[in-house]
Image 1 (cartoon, each protein chain N blue to C red):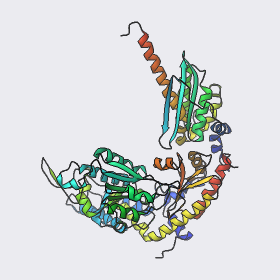
Image 2 (cartoon, rainbow over the protein chains, first blue to last red; image 1 turned 90 degrees about the horizontal axis):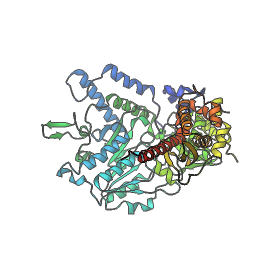
Image 3 (tube, each protein chain N blue to C red; image 1 turned 60 degrees about the vertical axis):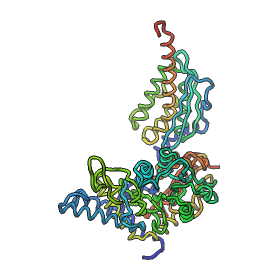
Image 4 (cartoon, chains in turn red, cyan; image 1 turned 30 degrees about the horizontal axis):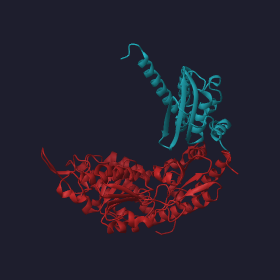
Length: 424
Length: 161
């Protein structure tokens, strides 16, 4: 397996695995540039989910019959596959519905530490403590921390961005300080596509004894990611952005931290002994997996991971870099187009503003040509406000995105300016 | 270079109104006003009205958003002033019905005038909300104005206690 990028022939072969890419919109072939919102799914992932229901469907971690054993084994194998893919041990991977649930799980477990008894006191937050996030976060990595601060009396602070959208790393030593208990930030911005300086932030957070929570939604699908190497304490990602179905995601947590946290959701399958008064809890990950789990989705996520691993994440990342360069060079060459965050190492997406045309209208024009992009604030209102915008247009690619599609998209953005009469 | 559908959505009149909107600027001492936000795109409109003697006397609005939302608010501000409250209410009702009809109901030119340029929107389900933003603000402002009028009438009734 080479570390080079995907060739045109590779991408064409990959495209044949994705049925939906061969549909037409408004009489034109679909050009899907909204993979940052959700990716399309290869047939093998869909087949694996269906095969589970046809051959091995039963409840996992309960029941002594043959089928239950088969299902449990496949479910736990999926955990191992996904753990290996992100540089974690299997018992450090907790299944969630998506990244949003993973972040909420950590935030609620932390506030449960305030009431769950003396053994959890070390994790409890109180007035005077500080939680730090950044100005470029997706709302999913902002609002749970606003709410945690509200519940515990802790103060929420953030690392601001500069006019270009880069994190103000010069302010890091002041903002992350001895009062800081949690530092939550994204590996890759879902708006800018820029890879944030994880090592520097983690080093500072750990130097002051804070827990690091990494939103890896836009990195795990597009880059080789190793949570142990990154030395983060928690990390979350969503399956549906990485070729898997909706309804499945994962929370990574350092083993000792996961086992030191009180549970979030409680109920069946997460306990050892239960009396009418109290219950004792299993170690992680079962401690955080109350109730019937998303079995077929977890198995499908493992199939998606196998698919990506077979291509090789180095090549996936190289393809993303290539898409990003073409997007940024092309958009920057169009009059009146401002690319947001056109700097640094990036994944294959770009958000931009077309002067004089609202993002919704840009998106509508592109849709007329069968080009699907995201328009709006991309769940990052504070970042848009900081950059002087309400909304932007985002084109985001994946392994199945061709350079020819990027060129079609660029041509359409140019034509949109003519259509809406904003050319000079 | 673009399909007929797209041309019918973005008619010349829509683009004109979005670039040179009518009725911009909030009224001083309005009878009522309403702020409406489209949470998916962040577009927002604040619309204020003067209502007296069962008539819409004036409408003023401000906000920002896509060409459809801006043009629609502009067309509303051109159409509704000087209408009776009853008529305005009926126009609002029929406007909503047409926009939600997926192209099966057309706005009547005699009643809606230039606002029929918005007919194309009803085939774009995702854009109906954009076109409705100003109209929903008008609806809320009118409801508030009528609530005030009802409360005032009740307070003035001789048997009020």
